[in-house]
Image (cartoon, rainbow over all chains, first blue to last red; front, side, top):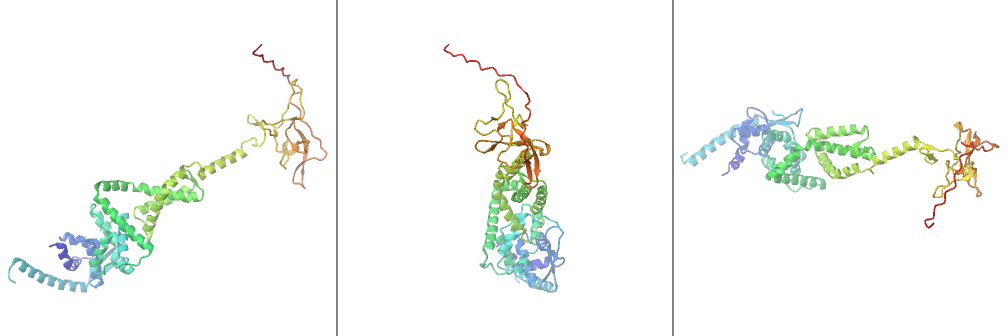
Amino acid sequence: MDATQLLKGVLDVAVLAVVEDEDGYGYDVVRRLRAAGLEEVGDASVYGTLRRLYTAGALTSYVVPSEEGPHRKYYGINAQGRAMLELQRKVWTEFSTTMNHLLTGEAA
Amino acid sequence: MTTSTVTPEIVAFAQGVRAALADLPAEEVDDLTDGLEADLAEAYAEDLQRELPDPGAYATELRAAAGLPMRTKVKTGVLAGLAQSWADTRADVGVAIRRNPALASVVEFLGELRPAWWIVRAWLAAWLVAWFFGNERGFGLAGSWWLVFVAFAVVSVQWGRGRWQGAGVPALIAIGNVVAVVAFLPVMAAADDPRSSAGDFDRGFQSGVDATVNDPPADGLTFRGHPVANIFAYDASGKPLRDVQLFTPDGKPLEPYASQSDDVPCAANECSTVWQSRQLETGQPVFNVFPLGTVAAEWDDQAQQTVPKPGATAVVPKAPYLKVPGVLAPKKVANSNE
């Protein structure tokens, strides 16, 4: 089994989690995810996810101009995003518990 | 936040990604790729070994993660199609090069030479513009045209460093680079060619200088660089001769002045006297009958030129010698049989 396949299903909640406390721009978010241990995460997947979460209304976005070089696009979580994060945390906790039990053979 | 340089590779890569997303609405593409260059530049700065992926694959990943439809066949114009295949080819070549260590080091070496190329292409552009106006001088430029070169060099270097890149500039640079590469050899050949317009100018200038500054006039007679106004001939006994007709070896009359000209040749200051031509049996006026005489002249307001005074008679200038030593008769050459 490939961790990247698993990652696809949980990237939304992972991204929401790393911008929960602090706004971040694209590569900043990638870096936080990698620092947290998701080393295989692809840049484009993160940028796409940010964009999708923004379109879905879970994130706000603003552009910070730079005097030198291109500007950066920051993303921040909003109320809807926090609600989504809370819900997905519960879903993940339940799901992972179930999977742990299943894989270790213990009764639920 | 790290400030990082956006290299031309990154610009080209971002272009490739945008091209691969071209089937989406422009607004969507903008939103999706906003800040892409900054992110890539930072990623690059952090990890120099990092490889830029294939823009097409990158775009597909971006699209999938953003929940956007997969690429549909777009009705692209010829230009957009070309741009896409160019981006694809570049990406493919880039991947192929990175997989080959020898090639990669060659490319890395050439990469170090890029600043030199920025200057060369600026020189090429300045030379071509100057050439258009006939102001190139061999490999160099005429006077203030060097300022044009300096201006071009500044823009070229800034572009090379990824600065001053507005919309459309990367495409302009790409086209300009192709033109520069194609034009390089012909321009070098033309600049090195003495027959180039620079040579024409220099030669023309020199001949102008010769014609106006150097005396004597090209159509007169000279003796060791000095003009010869008249000629005095003496016979074998040393007596002065009159009315001697002189000719060059190829049969041209030896005339110090142009007999076919409307202007009479001045013989004294302010044209108070003029050289008098002689008339042949055929009626043709000539100046090759020596010694030449002069005649008093005046300005004719009606004809707007100097003319011999009516009624004035020709005067033959005084000969330098009344008599010169006679010439001995040539000795008989001994016959070899005698």
